[in-house]
Image 1: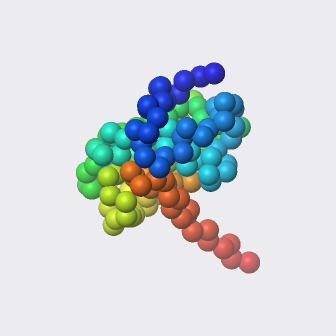
Image 2: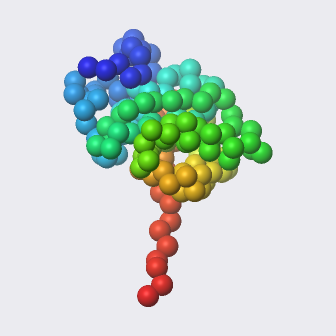
Length: 158
């Protein structure tokens, strides 16, 4: 089995997290079930990452299994967010023309903030412009993982 995210933290070190419940074959399961996605983000975004804050991009294989988790630590400067996210998306999708991602916005606060909403919107915009697909975006905090809404789908004119 691949060890994508390093060793698991000692039992009880992340209170209320569910990564310890992952099935043995988790690296071979697609990240399509919301509860399973939350468990994988629990594993890949450490306690320290949540305290520091940052952005987790889980690059997926064509079968939607985890290919590569990446974490950019620290708050994304507002004026540089588009550039930073664009560079990250390009770097992670260079070998995959139909790149797909699960994204986690990590911080210590348990409530969604305006800054989280802005980062979420930047992720959706940049991925759309780069032809990458965001399967889901989540807020990842010490309190747990919460799914954020996906992009609005516009109806085509008849």
